[in-house]
Length: 299
Image 1: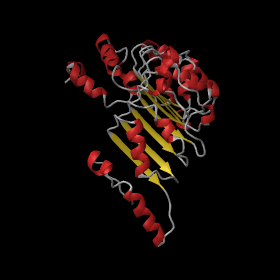
Image 2: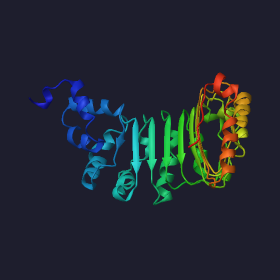
Image 3: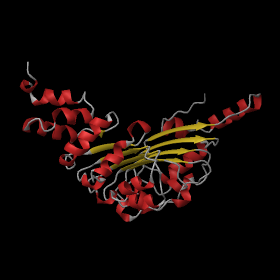
Image 4: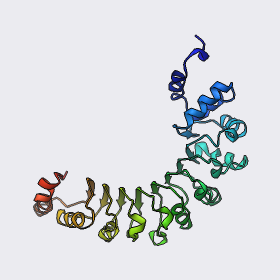
């Protein structure tokens, strides 16, 4: 059986077993039918250069990618030691991120060798009118990048996992009011920023990791009246059931899902066991067990 005899549906299923680089090298420009199938594949699947060899990347960036920029909706870029040529290849072929005009999802991972590379990417994000999901992890990060991120017109999901000084955090502008999902990992010793009601009114999902600070959490949450799901991890600090109950009743009327992990260390004596029981008792009120049916354990 020849490959071309297979129906389009089976070929698209087959494409899922290829990484993006190999798929492009094998099928793009083969004929018009396969070109259309490659375009269709990248409308719903991520283009990830992580598994490409230097030779394959050179071929893709020079011969194929210029013809695909207006077809790709999801892009993953990384400058790990294994794949240091990804952003270099983009720059060498004059392929800036704003060329991907239909890009909906952008993930940047470990781009830390040069601020110039991040500048070329971040400072063009506000030109991407289709971008709704942005994830930046372990990258070089300037405070000025926040200003550009908040100006992305229709951004809904934003995940920032970098070493950031939060006294540098810029309050979102009115253009970022579409934001529905925000994930932040705060570095040790830095408080939560204060955000206006207008900037958080559309927020439905919030994921926070607090290294050692929980003060200011109530103020941070008080303007998120539409929040439906909250996930929070804390280290070295405990928020008891009474404080949670008060914050939820006052500020989070639509909250349906609450997940938290509070990590702390106690010395092994009897008084500590009694202290843990006292904390757990605050989560055994009618609010927790009857009204919300949320259950808490210690291990």
